[in-house]
Image (cartoon, rainbow, N blue to C red; front, side, top):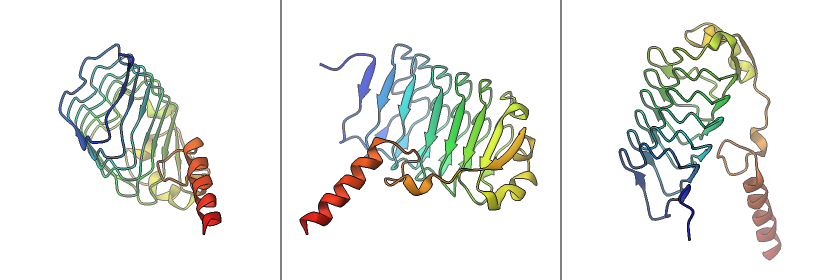
Length: 204
């Protein structure tokens, strides 16, 4: 029997509809399957008790207000498959300390990361500065936040707002080579992929 505070979305689901879990403040964690390509408007908005969300490397669009007010989240990784983070998507996620964007072609909408007042580190793997709308980081005190980007892109980020407004822009540590399943994080799932690869080679 599934716990009411832990939701596992079935693998047959291809998108999470608008307002699907809006206001579910008792929700602590949601597992999104690799079949999902779209997260709708207000999909998890107001899920203030949610501490963990894993966005799979299949999602291409995070629509407006999708995670607004998810104040329990402390970190989020947006995988390389995502090309659009729409307006207010993570607004008022006050508990977020780190945000990671893996994609090289990600468009970031108006106020997408506004009022994330707990933010300390922002990691962006894009070698070309992402397209941003106005007020992306409004109220997030980015003058106290460290921006981590590829070494060859530091100068480009320093030359354009809002990125130039961060406290400092430093070289991104290159751990991408260990991200074997390309989901933006290095964890046990990468070991599983490596083990399967090795076993496959042995089976030949």
